[in-house]
Image (tube, rainbow, N blue to C red; front, side, top):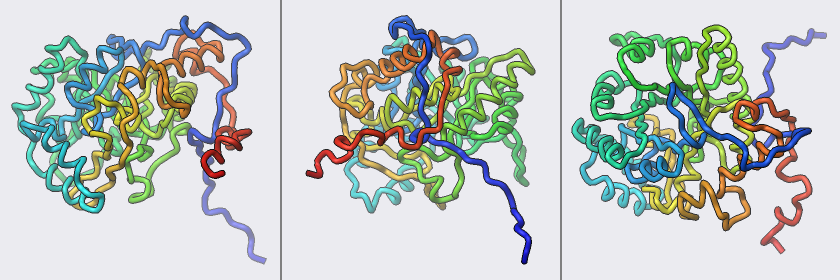
Length: 382
């Protein structure tokens, strides 16, 4: 008989619905928990960021998010910097039939970025007294980063579907993260990655924060199109290990931000317990009354000219941004009062701050969302 030969071993990876947080042996009052998020000397009251997606963040949303204690990232490669009147374009996107959206997106995003609009949008946010975070794709970072600093932005996010510190190419010299960090006086967040090695390599370039997540977003189809991605609990834990090892190696703490795949407060709590210092949310905030997407949400890889990897989805409009963050909640699905959910989870785990929440015990629990929930699962079928 032919001997059994293993080509390779596959490691088991876990997503949000497959794990649960174990309550602590000591509990604390949720009101006494500290949920601050710190990055390169900047303190953000809430560990919650709004994604750099055109259906989520515009200047008005960024201003409101900052006033409420969070941080919204405005996409400088989107409609806000391609069009003098982005509201008209956003209205067109929201009113286009489903079968025509990809072609429309490719047309809309084929227009060039206008350099003057970069400064105008940033200054609008800063004049309101708000913290301003903006995002650029790697290909445009060297060209526009000086404009970002000149306009007064507080944080630059350099993001693409997959980012590494080492890139092989026959083209001219690309973006070197260590050089970018040396030349810019503001904190830089880089993403996205999902592995220990990619994460620690990015940190070694001097970067101030790392985005974790490839393809989990509600409007992203990267996993279907390319087969690439790692479930978010495993990705977060691997990158958290890289962060902790890098801190021992360098003495510098670089926060990680779990980006995408979270549908409710429970998912946010699990991301933090898995090691995230903060989370970045898209579809949840796209449902806010103040979101520019008018009840729609779309992936920023949607307009790719040759391989679109995003889709426009209808998320609806559920509540104000303040209600989504702080309640009072009008639904039972965990999509509102996200901060209250996090504080409550930290309280029952005995965690006074985010770092202590990283030490909460987690278990593999594939039935955690269905156990004992027969009446909820059958609601509306009788």
